[in-house]
Amino acid sequence: MHGLIFVTWEKYLVNRFNTALFNAYRAKIGENTTNAPLASKVYDDAMLLAGVAAVHELTHVPVDTLLREYGHYFLTNGLTSSRCSYLLTQVHSGRDLLLVMRDAHAQMRRVPDGLTPPVFGYEAVFEHSNSLTLIYDSSRQLCPVLWGAIEGAAERYGQQVRIHEKTCMRQGYDACRFDVTFLPAKNIPNAHETPEQIARRKQQQQVDNLVLSLLPSQQGVTLTQLQGLLQMQGQVPATHQRLSRILESLQHLSHAGLVAHTANQPGDTLTNRKYWRAPTFDL
Image (tube, rainbow, N blue to C red; front, side):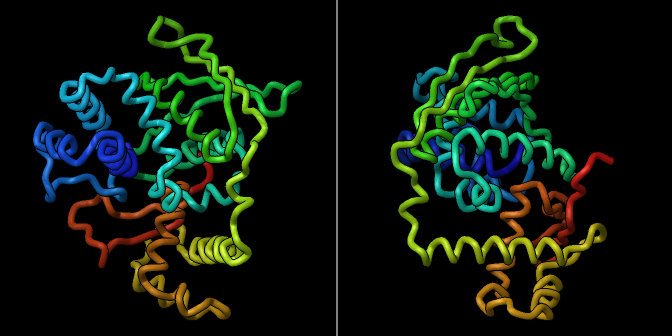
């Protein structure tokens, strides 16, 4: 499971409860500053399930409530917005976001890190352009997370959403089927962006695409080597040639499943970490 899941889960705990609860949670699962989750790493699914169980024991909040609230939080918090900005700049509605998520999850499965995010299917409802049926059949059976994510997708774009779970794997069906209808937005968040914000967002997207185009398809290059390649290109603002900004672009692309790296290999450090383009088709 992607490290961003674990990092945002812990942010959710602080936001939902308080720092005291979070500290008690860390003590209960044996976490400290040396083994805290990192967004660039990959972790076993069992760690998250154990964490959810620990919070349930500490708070007595039902597990499914925690999962649903977290799914909502994941799609609305600032860290996800930042790390997944390459994807989010392509989206203008809750329905579109769910479809982009589906494609991104499929792409992440092609990255050689052992990631297996759920790839849910969908059926379009042709008579209603804002409706669709989501089909979720992951062995994890974390359907409350998807329910919350649907709600979070709607909130991101100022929409309301109607959700009806027709079937559920937990009740013996082969898949969970959600009938989802997004209602028109009353307030569109992006409408409040200033011209300067829009220009910066578009420029960041252009730089992300340039960084992607410079990456090799195998072997990989380090952050410093990539900086050298970028400096050889014309018309790239000096601010975007800084290592911190290049790393930001790599994070955007990584969370879209378009960049692979060695972060999960033994001996990896930020200095020697290598990056390359992930395949965009099944080998």
